[in-house]
Image 1 (cartoon, rainbow, N blue to C red):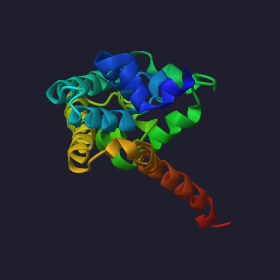
Image 2 (cartoon, rainbow, N blue to C red; image 1 turned 30 degrees about the vertical axis):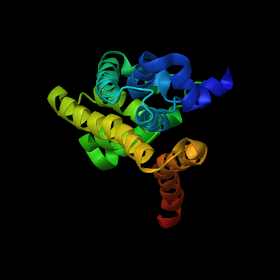
Image 3 (cartoon, one colour; image 1 turned 60 degrees about the vertical axis):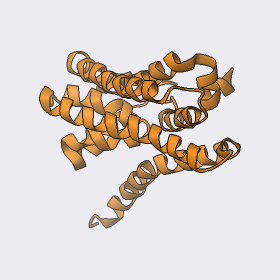
Image 4 (cartoon, rainbow, N blue to C red; image 1 turned 90 degrees about the vertical axis):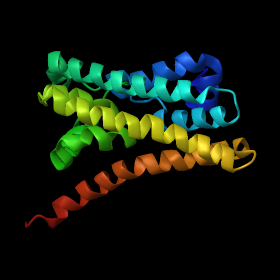
Length: 205
């Protein structure tokens, strides 16, 4: 059962199109959805569409709506009950470190975080919640949410579809491709960790 939740192919085969939409929705704004494989799942959905297994217009529209709606729910959750997150103790499914990462993005990028966070695992889940906690103006949030949802949900899916049509039998290389996607997704977090490690060294003694 564990492999089903780790492998995007198994997720799509097991749960189908509706499951795809629900996972994108959950990872976009439900604080317990941060562990779901959003990037690789969208890319794999594009590959499946290239093979004719999934309907491309349907998954593009569905994933876009799911991504935007998920962020909307996260925003309203943050606005109403989000402050409790700062007092929530660490557990197997939650660490204060996740909130701090999203806060770091907001401190550097402001409202643009809603777009940029789409491409950073964990941060993308907590960014809309923190936008609600910080009382970001709703119109501002909605604008960046739609842009981010379009670039992420539609863009990554179309990338998979394009490569699926461009490279014959690309399914054979799916695991290494997913590994590259995960590595690229983790790079911003690795850079942030490296930057924080260097900051104390720069401070005068």
